[in-house]
Image 1 (tube, rainbow, N blue to C red):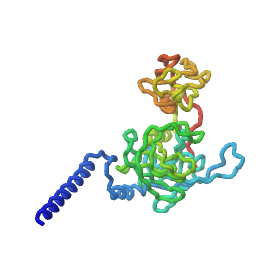
Image 2 (image 1 turned 120 degrees about the vertical axis):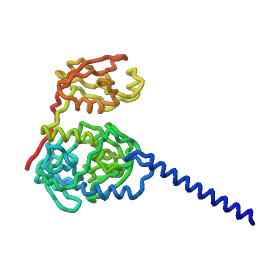
Image 3 (image 1 turned 60 degrees about the vertical axis):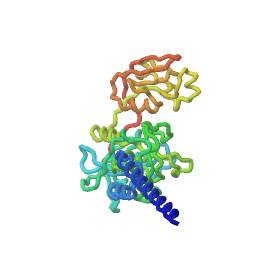
Image 4 (image 1 turned 90 degrees about the vertical axis):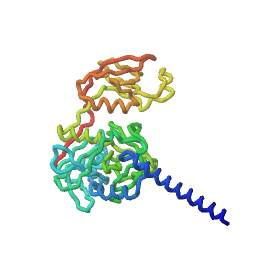
Length: 367
């Protein structure tokens, strides 16, 4: 009997020590985790972020004019989401949302519903169709503003919260992780040329467009803009515009009233397929394949040819065609840059003077 009692006591002691070790391990993981990358996230941390962040989240409704070329002249009603932020040089606050939500609607046709139910309207709208961003200037300094994070620090696997109004359900919150960064191989609207997305598995549905993607420090890392779905509802593959791109576009619109973008004057293949890469003598699928070189453009003047694969711009190795478009778009017109090109199974260096893109224009509206 004593032996049995002793055996039970020893088992209990080991169970206690094992439980203490496990608890110590979890505590160690929490202590070692970097901000926004906690290995184990207590529920109250989510709750605290939601409590403090929610007042900055809004619903956005817009009555847009009929699209050019449409057979119907009736206005189009659109609903989405947004987040309140502050930008230097702007009176009041700015609601960041998507261009596909607001479109060309006049400020008097845009309605912003605050977290407390109040409805306000913008005094001015800045818009950039190419990056799918709209900025609604609300002349009220008392509204609670969120902080835009440095999205270059975002890592795969870190926790995020997605705020928005899916299906008209205001102040909805979902959670997930960052699935990938620098996503560009996504088919979106015809006006959207700058594609540089964060991918997340947080549930995002119609009506969530324009809502913020928030890290565990309570800062905005992205603006939710698209889902990959055949049914039109969340399938665990969603995309957000990085906060750093939002800051760059907003800065130019607020300071200059327009976004200036560089261009080369080429049409690029939508993807470089593995079989094509091998046929061209490349050992990996990377770079941008040139399909068309437009005449009288910087690309033509530099000697780029159909069939060239642009592998580098200066010292940056290109991932794909969207990477090249984004880098060139961010350059000032007139700047000379060096391109590393793959041609006839060998590397060629070309120098090109960046031109100014004259496609879809940004705009600023007053009532």
